[in-house]
Every structure is written in structure tokens, then in C-alpha cells.
Image 1 (cartoon, rainbow, N blue to C red):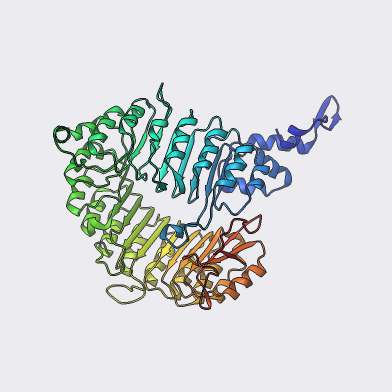
Image 2: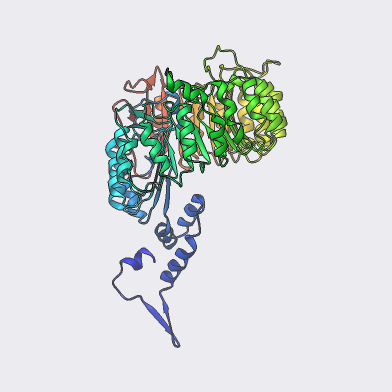
Amino acid sequence: MSEDVGTSTCKPKTSVTGEYSVTNPDQVLENVLENVLIFLTSRRDRNAVSLVSKSWHRAEAHTRSDLFIGNCYSVAPIRVTGRFKRIRSVWLKGKPRFADFSLMPADWGAHFTPWAHAMAGAYRALEKICLKRMTVTNDDLGIIARSFLNFKEIVLVCCDGFGARGIGVIASECRNLRVLELNEDEVLDEEFDWISCFPMEGTSNLESLCFDCVESSVNFDALERLVARSPLLKKLRLNRHVSIGQLYRLALRAPQLTDLGTGSFSLPEVIGQQQDENLELDYGHAFAACRSIICLSGFRDLAPEYLPAIYPVCANLTSLNLSYANIDAQQLKAVIRHCHKLRVFWTLDSICDEGLQAVADTCKDLRELRVFPIDASENAEGPVSEVGLLAISLGCRKLESILYFCQQMTNAAVIAMSKNCPDLVVFRLCIIGRYRPDRFTGEPMDEGFGAIVKNCKKLTRLAVSGLLTDRAFSYIGQYGNLVRTLSVAFAADGDTGLKYVLEGCTNLQKLEIRDSPFGDSGLLSGLHHFYNMRFVWLSSCRVTKQGCLEVARRLPKLVVEVFRRDEEEGGERGDFVNTLYMYRSLDGPRADAPQFVKIL
């Protein structure tokens, strides 16, 4: 039923034709729309439907159960709860991605508190909350736990502000909890036994429990009892305080697991009988009992001699995350040769080009690769290079997404990847050293990135680095019409390059730029497009306060913030703004801006 009908106390207007009574056509249309729209799940499709007419707008709002908000400051909570009445799932994002690189002050904002209060009063049937880069307090978690009677899932990604006591409230109060995932969060170090807060009697409904980012130790006996009482548990990711001996016991308790984060994957420093018992355990037997595992991660504080224990599950793995495991090429080869079904692989660059060659030789169905640096300093020796990238492009031709950190690269290797992997949707090449050219020719990396946007017709996310001129950005503007997210670091000649992007990339939603020579002229070239974008971030560029003021004057519904990463007031660096962050908002500037943030 539509909202109009649901709140009306009057009889509907009808017209009589023969013996048939016909309800108001608008009301009929809304009823029909509601029955159709419940099958429409795409956010973009629903947004488009809501713009057709007022009746479609009402019907879409009345049937929406899942809510995604890409910027918590783009709309006020009261506007959201006023429009959408039947929400059961909320996905909310806060700070922009560059906050992950210490480019944003810790107390900049993105507080969940106002959202928690608004949803508590409006969405009593809420079942799921996902938050990313938000500041969440223990009190906020208490509101969630006590407000939603059938609450089932909470996922916190890159969040901060809360501790073990808040997690404990969720565990104790949410009796229907199925999913508790803490991913890359900064959890306050509180001496509190949150694991024991789960109900101790009866069967648990838990399907996913992830706490690998929690730095404090856990009550293992309580954890073991919880796992044993959770027959539906499919995903379990442990922190570094869980040893391989304890993992052995948990694995035997939960053979139904499909996704396992192993914890430390080494023995604790103990002596005596317990140490002897740990040494005698057959760890491979525990993994052999978990034949359903298809996703494997963890390996913090890895002891390489225990890697053979995972061999029994390697043949079925579709995802392997070794981004916390400092292993070399030979150690990787022994594992990867069993992983023929692998589709997702994350690793440190310690495996070197030789390790990437082994991945290319075995993992023919690989779709996503991420290679992270052990040492991200500019003068470090880079263990992976164009050799590894070329090997991957030749061996993994179904690749769709790549993040590749390196110290040196060549145009030829990037061009080869564009031709060998035309299905790439995400290409992020991060050459750590500033303004690094092609290592062999000394030429800018223009042709390599140009080939990516020309040949990869599905590309939606691109990160560029190295020595680049305006030519590279002209290629991006000409061929990157599907690009929605563009990240730029230490690149370009000047404003012309930014103009190419802002005028050519008509689908651009998120633009992140740091340490590049773009100024006011380039910024103002995007006035026609900024209202269509989620956000624009420029730090350590050549944009002045006057240029920012001009944007704010000509686009009054765009929030224009300037600030410094060191939290000093003003946000200026000589004549230039230190950091500019612009985003669209239906409700104007936020009310919780700290003193060091100036909203123009």
C-alpha cells in the first residue's frame, strides 16, 4: 500500500462504469508500482525510478528496505527517516578513502551518533547495519543493541571510537545476532571480556564472527564454547592472540567453516608440557577436517614451518589473503601450486617477481590481485617490478581487478596488461617513488596508462602514479568515459590535465588527488560536473582559497571544506589550501565541523 492510502481515513474516490467501480487512477498506479518495485534491487535503478514523478517517488520510498548512503554528510538523518519508513538494512560511509593514509585529522568528524538516535526512533525493524570510516562510540553500540528487537548483522569497516565494552553490549543484547564483523577497525584497548557476553546457554545463531583487528587478547575458553554452540558458523576470523594450537581446537569444533582467518599461525612462547603438546599436534588434520573452506586469511606472526598444514584445503580455495604474512617466493610456491581454483589473492611484495610468476603459472582463473609493500618508503628496494606485472598479465587473463605497489615500472608492461587483460574493471598502479619514469626508456608513463583506458572497456576505477604529463590525462578524458573513481598522486604538468579529466569523464563520481600541480583554473573547469559527483579531494595541490570561494559562490549546494591535516586552523599553505574536500549535500554544511575545518 502507498503511504497516502495507509494514512487516509477517507473512502477512495471512484468512478462507475457499468457495474464496475474503478479506484482513483493514481492510487491504482502506486499499488501496481509497489508490487513491481519490490523486485527492483539495484540502487541506481531505484534512484532513477524515484525521479520519474511524485507518485513513483512515493512508491519507491515505501518499498525500499535497503539503504545505502555513500557520504554521511550528504543528507541529514531526519530527512532519510522522514522519507524511508520500512528500512531493514543500512550501509553508511563516513570519511573519504584518503583518511586511511593519515591525510585527514582523526577528529574531523563522521560521527555515527546522530544516525544512531534517528534510526532508533524510526526503524524498529532494522536488522542490519554496515558502517565504513565512521566514528562509533560504545554508547552508539548500546543504542543499536537496545533499539532493534530483531537485529541480526553489524559490520564495522575502518571505524574507530569504540571498545570491547561496546562489542560486549552487542553480544549480550542482540539475541538474534548472526553477523559480527570488525574489519580493520581501531578498537580501544579496554580490559573487558566481550566474548563471554554472548549468551552461554543454548544454540547460537552466529554465522560470521570476525575480530582479527582487535589488539587485546580474548577469553579462549569462552570463544571455544561459543564456536561449539554455533552450528551455522561459516566465517571465523581470529586475532593475533589466537595461536595455531588454539586454532587446531577451534577447527575441529567447526568443520562447517567456509571462511577462516587463522590468527597468529605460530605457537605461543610457553614452556613445559603445553609446549610439547602443541608440537605433537597434527595441524594438517584440523584443516583436513574443514574441507569446506574456500577463503583463507590471517597468518599474522607466521611461522613458515606450519604452512604445510593448509595444503589439505588449498585445492578448493577461491580466496587467499597473505597480506600479513612475510613469506618469500619459495615458501609461497609450495602453497600456491595447489591453488588452481583461486580467484582472489592478496599478498605482500616479499614474494618478489618470482612469486608472482608462480601465481601466474597456477592461478588461471584469478580475478583479483593485490600486492602490498612491506616497506612503503620512497628509497626502499622494490622486490616486485614490471617483471611480475607482465607475468600476471600473461598467465591470468581473466583478471578484473588489480592493486599493485612497486618502486619501478615500464610502459611496455602496462600496455601488455591492457591487451592481455581487457576485462579489467579496477586498475590501481601505485609507483611509490615520486615522479618515476619508465625505468628503461626514461619516458613518462603516459602511454601505459593511456593503453589501459583505451583497451579496458569496462574500467570504472583507476589510480595513476609515476611521471605523467598532460598527455596521460588527455587519454583518460578521451577514453575513460566509464571511470567512476580516479586517484592521482604526484602527477601531471598543470591545470590542463585536470581539465581533460573533468570535461571528459562524464561518469566520474569520486576524484582523489594529492601532491599534484593542479590549481584554480583546473578546479573551476569542473563547475558543470561537481553537483553530479559524490566528492572531490585535493591535498597539497596549488588551489588557492580564492578559487575555493569561487566554487562555493557559484555552487551553493556544494559543501566546500578546507583544513590542514595537522589540525591547525585555516587550512592554508602559503597562498595555497592544504586540503580541499568538496561534496554535495541536500541539507547544507554540517553542524559538527571542528574548529580547524573552515566551511566556505
